[in-house]
Length: 409
Image 1 (cartoon, rainbow, N blue to C red):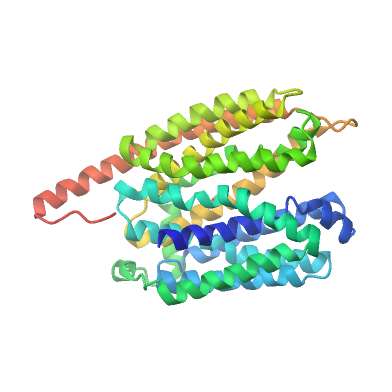
Image 2: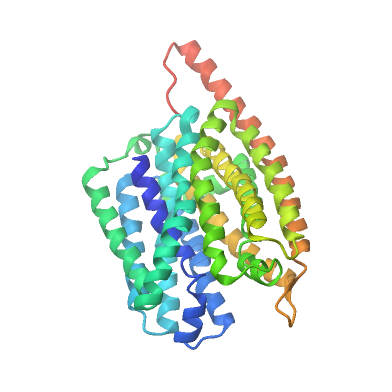
């Protein structure tokens, strides 16, 4: 199950990430400007965010397997449309379709993880599932770029759609129905369920923490390659090595950070990861001309810190919702993350200015904003961690009084 969910995430992340390196090809082949390309990228994020909110009320009313297959089928269809798109407008429409379905898949996956695995092991499960981000960087992007250079920009989408179709067949055959949450779902209609989830005070704090978490994670990404080339002095052909080595270390450290969060505590690992990320991000945004080996070292430590934050925070978030609200909570949380990421990218574009020489100005200011959001997130997660500990303590006491065995949250 962990392997299926990890590979599922790999296809979703790769589909989202592959557009950035294809930018130069799309600008040339589709005869579009940078603004239009920006809409192609952001269309996925905003449509994914909107669909997450719309689907939240229905997320706990169906077998998780059927829900996952429904949205994954739509995602594959959207990717096929991207592969067939002849022009800009069709590609934009295809990205919207892909986002509508792809944006809900992660939330369903996290709900399944929460249903099947105890809190004590969710850190390591999240560590493996979150490896999808690093794996797409190391394996997916180079293969996608190779296919694009050899067969055209449609080729990576054909690859993702074909691979996704195979994963869909595996899910149909091997994945068992997940229906335990249906026995405790009492809301009569989807809108009532959505309203209850959104109005829950603790859930609202979690959504705010996710907003800050996404803001800190997405702000530096859009201009990372431009900063590396124009400010740090790297060459375009050195970027695959930079991202490849960073991705390999992220793959290695992801599961280790997950295990560590189970052992010493999710919030503790989150704070450690935040401290590392803050130090490395502050150093990174102030770099001038720097040798490749040093940039690689700084990037590796920075992304290890960032991935530690994401893994531990994701595992901690799974303990917040009640069993009857998991699907709705995860769907809204995923939606908030998508929209916040899109807004963060837009705000970053307003802060950073490119000079006539190509160098970026105010990238250090962007770094300070990221550091502030990271510190605020530490405060928000502190309250959430206390709630989770109180909830766990209460459940144990109830189990002791009733003489029953303690089951997964």
